[in-house]
Image (tube, rainbow, N blue to C red; front, side, top):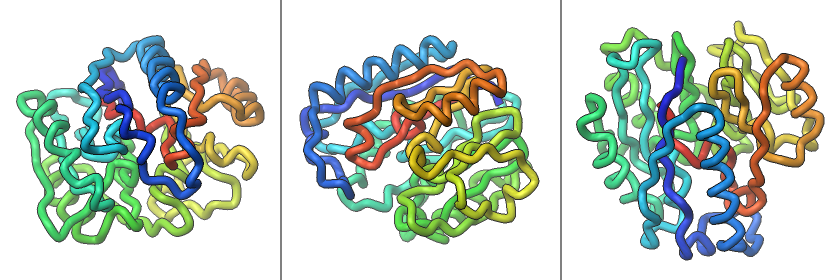
Length: 258
């Protein structure tokens, strides 16, 4: 898969009230500065970065991966957008602006109730899509996604997610058929044929990294993971993520890429 675009949204002042399992106070000004550095990393990886304005109605709306996914294989003209339904009630409505931004670029499908689906649960590979069934994504959402992708010849597999917010909290695809996954986390059967690099438990947050060609965007402060990726010949772009980690968000969460 070759990514060329990233759609982002800087955090607004309301980000201080984002959903958080940590309950740690978020420094919004620092988050905004970290987001700017993140956008610089996307651009350094060769992506065209487009930004929507902050939306103060939705404290979590900087996490642009969740409202929609763009899927469709190697050919850009075959791609399509699927707009999900956030599983967190306070996030429902975020998807409208994302749908508007994607309209006219791709054929677009919107999921309908009772489906819930967040992009953080959708692991997109060149030949398959694996979707986490989690507290944010339900069976109806996975079924509707499969129907929406029926013309792409990409099979959709469901995988249970336990102990993590999203599937991509535990595992990401960084390209070249390589997965980055938390050590000890059991790979779902649909991923069993792929190479896996294991992130040590003390650096579990780094399992959520974003592969863009030869680059991998990695949260700063995880030296063992950095060394492991560098040993594979990948170019690492480090980004500060402390304030987004407080809101249970990772590197992939901050952009919708295609």
